[in-house]
Structure formats: structure tokens, C-alpha cells
Length: 202
Image 1 (cartoon, rainbow, N blue to C red):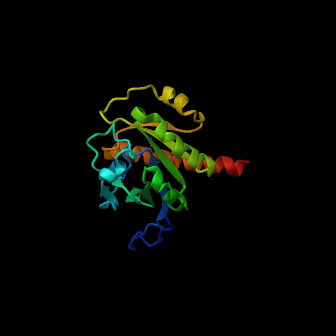
Image 2 (tube, one colour; image 1 turned 90 degrees about the vertical axis):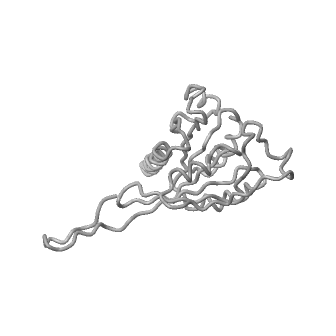
Image 3 (cartoon, rainbow, N blue to C red; image 1 turned 135 degrees about the horizontal axis):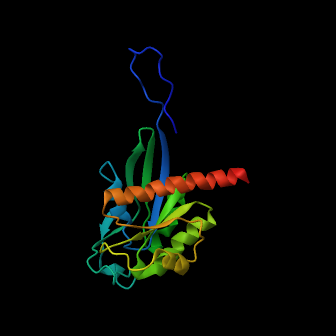
């Protein structure tokens, strides 16, 4: 993704080529940190669809690992980040609860890749996201969210537990920190490019 041609006149203003854009989806279980990651990395005020959790969710949403969680995403999160002077990423966070999964197909349309955000306290919650992207052959990376800034399991142990291919990038991150979240998105772009190149090579 390079710059456009420049005018040979040294006095003429130098103008970069057109900006490319790409879409990335952030998925994961309920309370895994999707809204937090989108908000941390976005260079604009993120669009969120957070709603207060009510008694109606009792027995439906398991917040035992996140007892202080009082809101939940009911549609999507949206943010934007410029990775380079000519590449803008649009980041969409999916709702985590099962009753909102019908929105995932629409959110994934046109995406170049995805993030599966994992909370190792509830590892099984990551399987639906992994299955979703694998079934649609959408390249994804796995990001282990270190809620207390500690990685409690070895990365390869998490890979084994999730039964994901060695070709799928997996890393630790802190969804609250912009630079950490940015590195996750960079990994998605790199993996998507490699995935596409492998497909073209046959």
C-alpha cells in the first residue's frame, strides 16, 4: 500500500495517493472486553450500543467472572484507526450474548479478518466465535485479554485448549491499552495478507 505519484515540479504540493480502508471484526464471549478494545484503539469517539443489564438477564448472561459488569452490547461497537498514512481500519465489535448472534453475519460482511478476544476464566466462550470464522473461512487471530495484566496460562496451552491451527496467530493483550490493542489489529492485517497470498498461490 504505497503512495500515489508525485508531481515532478518541486514547488508543487506533494499529495499522497488514495487512502485504503479495511474492516475488522472483534468477537468473543460475553464480557471478554470487546467494547473496551474498540474504545481503546479508536481515534474517534467510538459508537457503542451499550445497554444496562437488568434482572431479565439473570440466569441468561453469566457474569460470575465479571460481577461488576453493569452494561452489555446489544448491537455492535464501532471505531476507526489509521494504521498508516494510507490505511484506515474500521473496527466492529460484535455482541457477545447468544441471543444477539444473528447480527454476526451482517457485521462480518466485507471484513478482511477478525479478532477472537479470549477470557481464560471462561475459555469455552471463545468456541462459537472460532467456529463462526472458521466456517466462513475468514482469517482470524486469537487475543488473550489479560484483565489483571497477568497471563495466567502459556499461550501454546491456550492454543491446545482451543484446538486451533498452528497457522492462527495467538497473542496476549490488554484490551484497555491502546498500543496493545493496536498490535492485535496489525496482526490481523498481516495474517489476512498472508492468508490471501496463500490462497492465490493455490
